[in-house]
Image (cartoon, rainbow, N blue to C red; front, side):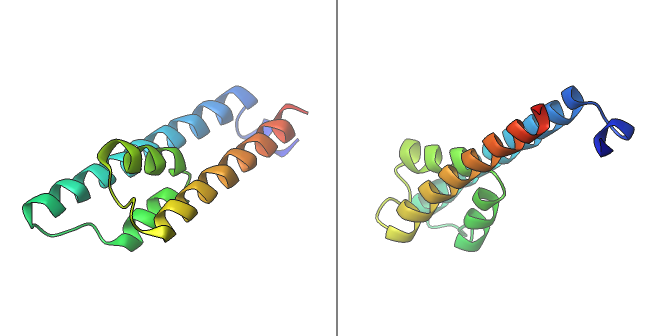
Length: 102
């Protein structure tokens, strides 16, 4: 297969997991920062940025950030799309893992 020339399966999985963990931490941290800024009347994190990081496999961090910080929970588009993004990301990761392990 093509990846044998570049990396073995274990390396691919470890790199993917590291990237996913970093993106979820970033998504969670951005939700917390935006909530803190909202409370203190400071410059806010743009909603586009919150969506972008969450869409780039940071779905779990975005959803947990909403729950933990009670942030953006009144906006229907955050409540719907963050959860949809998380479901899609889990499905994509499952398919990717299946294809990699065949």
